[in-house]
Image 1 (cartoon, rainbow, N blue to C red):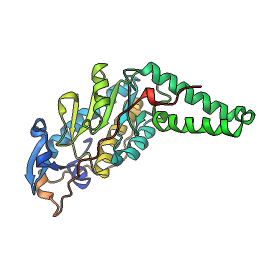
Image 2: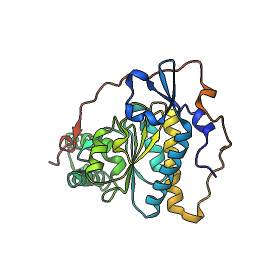
Image 3: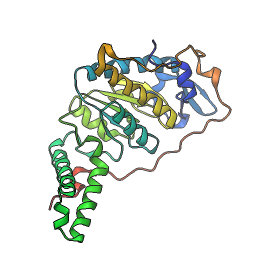
Image 4: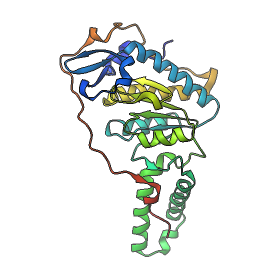
Length: 273
């Protein structure tokens, strides 16, 4: 059975790229046409690329290596957490802290601190502290949990990264490249695909599109871990129109450039006192 169908991709709006003035020429091989100032992604290529990425993620999961799901943009945050949890993997859906991979020793210490505070909360230690001390610890725990909750149980380096919008997650991509960690990337028409090992050309701004592609990667993890016992959910994978131009809506909303966020690294997390 096919991993994904043209119909599913079309219904999720995966074919809508960015405005033509915001494109990256390196994505040209994945563009089908241009309509009303918007690039339309070639979904026939997306189908093939999803299948390639699916097989790769499945093989990583089958070898018992962790996969890290990364997506910090608003449209991806909930889906990244939900799908990573569904397949029992790890995720980063808040800001990527500089050094999350390349300075994992420091990150591990902050994760230990988070777990220590959680233990203090449950073993009665808080009861022996002043109200002010407890409040301070709770604030520290909240900040640590916000950034580290999705990786607090990850032991060592991931076997692969799945990234929604490698352009936005450039620090994560750079760190993975330094450590030779393979990257599967959901790349819109404004992305640079050169640093991504498995490019999935797709609209990375639409929630439905992000949910569809991320969900397929989670299913790849589940199949990889379950092996021959895997029983996929029944989905509609019937053939759909072969070209994106056959299902072009009347209105296409282009996403504006997002405001740049201030970078933060592990050193900015609260230190143990």
